[in-house]
Image (cartoon, chains in turn orange, brown):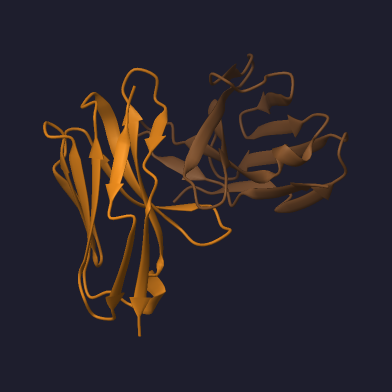
Length: 112
Length: 116
C-alpha cells in the first residue's frame, strides 16, 4: 500500500520568501507524481506532473523534483506572493492500478 | 489543460432522499473517471473507479449500494448517493485522466453535499 506524507503540515512565510514543500512516498513503483493546489472549498488545480523517468519539471515560479529511488519529491515556489496561499497536495500514481495516493497536504500562508 | 466539470456545485437534501452528481470531461474523452470524498481539513479519499461501459469498482469500505456510479458515455459519469443521511454530508470530487499516456489527472470543482 502506498503511503504519501507531506511535511510540513502548515507553513507561514512573508511575501517574497521562497517556499519548499516536501513529499515522500513509500512505494517507488509509481507511474508519475503530481502536485496540486486546492483553495478552500474548491477542487484541485494541477500544477506540475513529473513522469517516473523524469527528475524535475518547471513552470514559471514553480519547480518540482523527483527522486524515485529515495521516494521523495519537492516543490519549490520562488518569490512567494499572497496569492500563493492555498493547500498544496502531492499525489503518486501507482503503476499497478493507476490510482492516485494523496498526501494530507501542506497549507501555505503568505503574509503581505 | 483539460477541463472537468461537476454539477451541481452544492446541494442540500433531506435525509432519506437520493442525490445525483454529474462529472463531465468537456474537451476530452475519458474511459475512466474517479470519485473522491473529502472531509474538512482532510485529504482526498478514493471512493471508486468509474469505467465507461462496465461496472464501477469500489474501494474497500465503500458501500456500492449507497453510492451508485454510472459511466454512460465517454464524457459523463454520475454518482448517486441513495437514501442520504447526515453522515454522507461531504465534499465530492471527480477526476479524469488524459488518455495520452501521461495519465495526468484533471479534477472537477467539487460538489458540496449537505444532508439535513
